[in-house]
Amino acid sequence: GEGFNLGIRPEHLTIATDGAAADGITADEDYPEQAWLQAKVSVVEPLGRETLIRAVVPDGDHETVLNLQVAPSINTQVGDRLPVALDLAHLFVFDPSTGDRLDRVV
Image (cartoon, rainbow, N blue to C red; front, top):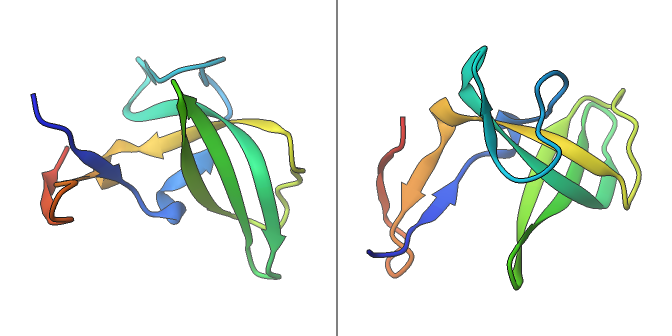
């Protein structure tokens, strides 16, 4: 019954292609190690070798912020909605009161 925080590095988030959910979190039978979130782009920062994207996922009264690190060839703008794939093998659980890493989820 206790809360926890999930963490994943930006390089383990990608813009999904096939099987992405229209909203919410889903898993794809063909790719059980991935899940998808629908996110709205709030910042796009081209850095030459890569582009950093900040996007938000609505979560009731709050928004969860995602930071993505993508190839510069990805063309997106503020306001775009993106299906974001999470590599679940790189998901971590943290204690919200201490910030300590508890364990890998997978």
